[in-house]
Length: 118
Figure 1 (cartoon, rainbow, N blue to C red):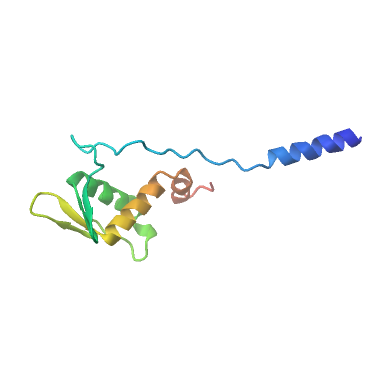
Figure 2: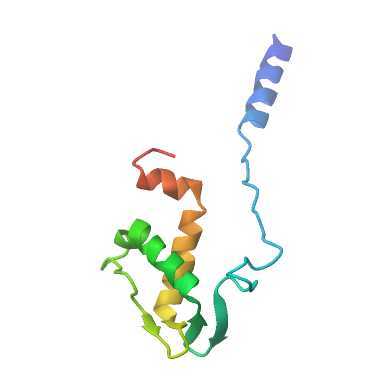
């Protein structure tokens, strides 16, 4: 009887452990056209210079997650066009992009947006 209690206790201790998710750490920046820069050309001061592809990704994320902010984000919020066909993203656009990008890679957040209970 004591062995059975000890076995159940040991099983309960091992079954209640926390399982940490595996974090995927990229080894290099992603490709944006023929450049491996993830769409980020420069990051100086309070603004960063980004490619049209970065802007497209930003607006796609706004379409999915923009209503999660109060007030809700709108397309091109914090983005201004430059003379060289690239764009400037202000500090708030940068922060919102990185936050939405994390959400987009989080299965838990995606399930919450779909109304599921993760």
